[in-house]
Length: 208
Image (cartoon, rainbow, N blue to C red):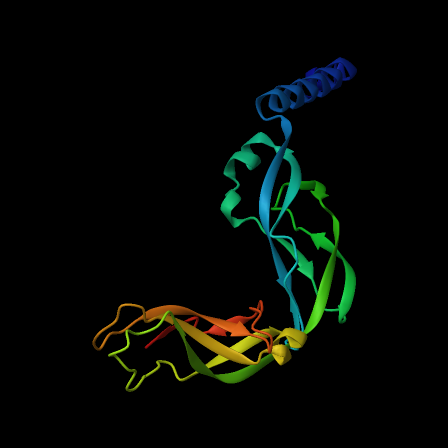
């Protein structure tokens, strides 16, 4: 038997190599390498709590390459790109959008791969809520008392804007009111000139 195996061993070796190559091409045809594009959310990571970023991109486009069966198994909802904000400073910063591909996949492209973001210092303040009546009562009706809920809110956001807040107001339409009434309205942060400022107010609604 050993003598039989040793005969024509070069031909047998070539046959084995040919079988391996054929298997490779068959598997490649059945499970080809493909490219696929996803639009994924962008998360900001490692941002110092004293800073705030409000103009980072919401999404990025990523292109992945890999076997078809691996691509089919990917759950697109779980994919996330990220910005590492650990080294940013107040002002304009050029940052890279990163992405870690799933196992068995290769990252081909991230677009955009770099972006410019504006970083500002973060601030917050406690400010009382004031009523701003819209319209007017009839001559025989007078405002007796007002109860506001909440009486105070937290204003937060870019330090420059937070510091510019002069008051937080709740607009209440009083036209045509002749008896006790309640109203719910979205709160606004005003500067000293009455301009509405783009800051976060918590809670965002008031009741009077």
